[in-house]
Amino acid sequence: MLSRKQLVQAAQLAEQCGRYKDMATAMKQLVVEGKEPLTHEEKTLLSEAHKLLIQEHCSSWRRLKCSVEQGVGKQKEQAQAYREAIKKELEAQCWEILSLLDNVLLKHCSESDDESRAFYLIMKGDNYRYLAEVALPDAKETLVKSAEKAYGEAQELSQKYMEPTHPLALALALNYSMLYYEVLNNPQQATKLAKAAFDKAIAGLETLSLEFYKESTVIMQHLRDSIVQWTSDQQPQVENNVGELEG
Image 1 (cartoon, rainbow, N blue to C red):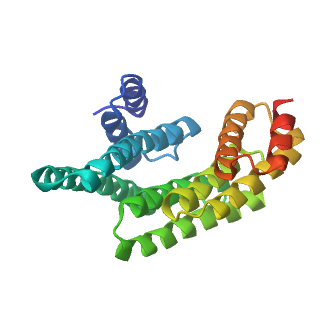
Image 2 (image 1 turned 30 degrees about the horizontal axis):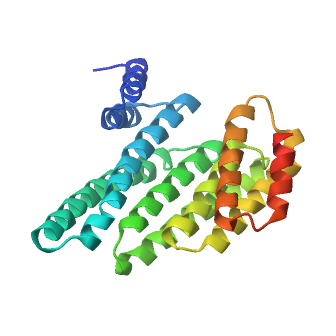
């Protein structure tokens, strides 16, 4: 049986060579067998493992869209079957991490550990978002509501206990806005949510600690890029804020 340190090392090695399934397996074992709360490094490894693995499935599922829509006859049937197989793998992975979150991580997380609770709630929202993206219309609404509930609970924690420049507050805004843009096809709401978080972070740059500087500014860059993309350069105020951030 591998020790906690060895499992972390195994996950790191798997990430280095792009074997995300092995990375996720190592971190799942650490969560199930561990008796102590996860460290920041361990939480990050767990999140990255599942995000990279699931996004790989999402990317494959999206790429097959044209083959399904434009294919004919047996070719179309084969593309549909392959896309459905990828979807089932994605769903199994999402439900697995959701079970881990509900039955272990959130269940045993200290009520006073606001950062960890927010972190796990964001993960929960992300996985419901992935499920909603590939879901059939009759199941999509319920999954979207579950994602909004998780993101909403994380938002309450971030607004109450974190500065607007905290990386968790920024990551939440980015991921929550992606729910509206990618799943609900609502760029207006996505832009509104992302811009509100970006503007608050710009206004509170003096509160940005050196500890979070690199992580927070990278997420702010992603927020900025998303806002610019979604508004197609129609909001001069965004450009002004961009200049302030770069300055």
